[in-house]
Image 1 (cartoon, rainbow, N blue to C red):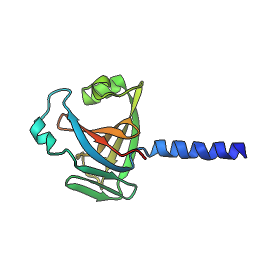
Image 2: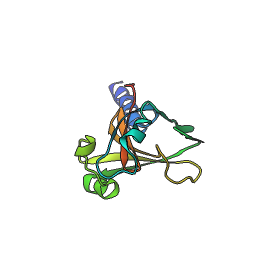
Image 3: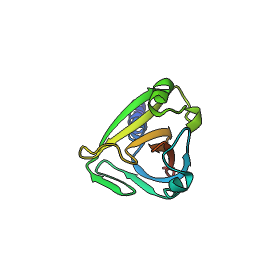
Image 4: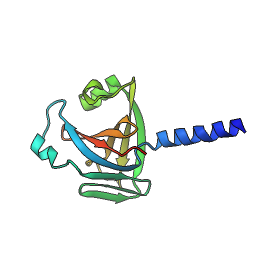
Length: 140
């Protein structure tokens, strides 16, 4: 019986970790670690915007799609810096690696919310035009 409970607990724990991005997120802040194509005033218009990630639907600002496809990758800090030109410290990311979600919708290219950088179970960043928008989700 103890092994069954341990197995069920493991499945629930790792299942939640695998799909950490599912749910409704809210833009709460923005960080500009380097040069950005948008100003703080333009970025602050995003505050309060909701992003919804589910296995059957994605929506954020003016983008929505049915049947989104998700790909997860893990990057070291040097790989992350090479891609995003910012450090873990600038985004308050702890650890040796970070998990990145790449979302695609019917072959569309990159769009706001298509990249989600996990910081904690309930906080993440989505980069756009050199700005990193902080998204938070109410704890589950």
